[in-house]
Amino acid sequence: MEVALNLLLKKAPLCSNIVYMLEWFEEKDQHILILEYPQPCLNLKTLLRYNNHKLTETQARGLLAQAVRAAKHCMNQGIFHRDLKLNNLLLNTRMMEVKLIDFGCGDLVKDSGYRYEFRGRHRPPEFYTKRKYHAGPTTVWTLGLMLFQMVTGRPAFPTKEDIIAGDLTFDSSLSG
Image 1 (cartoon, rainbow, N blue to C red):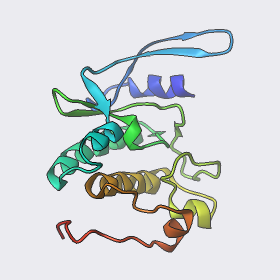
Image 2: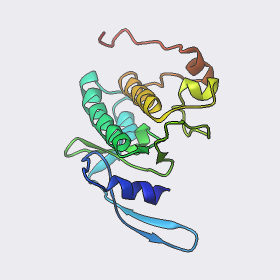
Image 3: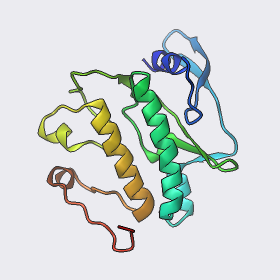
């Protein structure tokens, strides 16, 4: 599926905030993908680690805006990334350009939603309460969780129970 999604992404229009597949090869029991590699770069999780685990609101806003453009482009192309997280966003440190990577968990957007396992700690509440989730709302949820972590230095919801309850505490230092 990852190869198919990468091929779909290459259809015009392109988005500067996505790492594109340049080539791919099929081997006996695996696919080999050759992808763009922006240099110099690091993923956003590493960037946070270098910055005391959080960014200023201005920095986070600029980075998130680019992540939103990438996610929106995917949705417009009919692709649900399904694994949006700080590790899957590369930052070209020279250009301050964010690029979305890793479509290995992705799927085509379906109106009927998804029932199968959701990867990572960014599961939406409906994954637990209804055992079903949808691409658009889940993408927005995940982007919000990443923004929260970028500006606070901590996950929005440390546990599954916190996600279900919607217990979220904002730092008083954040702008209103």
